[in-house]
Length: 180
Image (cartoon, rainbow, N blue to C red):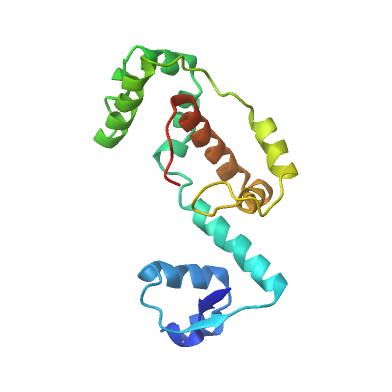
């Protein structure tokens, strides 16, 4: 695993803590890591595992609290009334949402006429059991994300794991292929 070398930090405190994932994450966010010229290789298995887990927690945490991960949306996306409104092309309850959210659900509503939309096909408990059984190195998408990422979330960030479950179910219900 490569991490920014100590020389890549301006602040002395950060240089001294350059192996801490919070410090690494902050540095990588500066210019998406593209400005880093010198990297240090970390080879110790325990350290690599720790940094990988901490990185995935930071990565997935970025989505937490975003619009579609709030409790209001969780309730809305699992609501029979909301699903039935989409089937009819009625998105009036979204009039106070952003234009992007309205366009997104309008596109879903447009496709809904051709589909028999159902609530979630599998439960959160079923997905948790699946994640616990599958081999960690198994890839889940062309992006290379593997089940190990979900295992970390299930163990350390249950709320984010549940938010991802809800997003995946919305995509599944409406036949939407997510980019990542």
